[in-house]
Image (cartoon, rainbow, N blue to C red; front, side):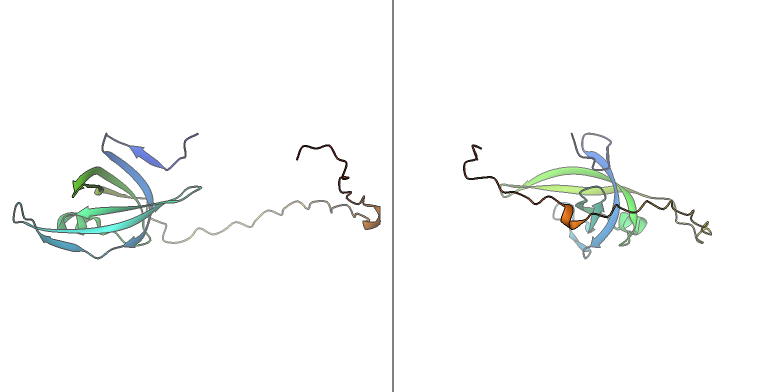
Length: 148
């Protein structure tokens, strides 16, 4: 039986997960050695709910996406990822980049008025047990022929 991680596989290297943003890292940036263009990126940690909640670190790359996504800690989002790996000095590293963010439906501004709760049925009382009437536990004798 495979666990349900609440994900949707979209293509060979893309998937989406829905979860809550629980942490963010400082924005980082620099200038590309290859193109000479300036770049910015920021990493976030998302917790995916389930019987065994999982956490995932992903990056948002580019000033335009950082501003458009405007991700906040505590938000529940569906994040669409592009997944790739690269090699550096003989070691391999995963690269998980968000390319689209879907926000769930907004919470209602006013909570609906709660209806009175129906009365719960009363369970019958447990029967009383006389301690003197219980049978004491007897340990097995030394001549027991059990193999363990």
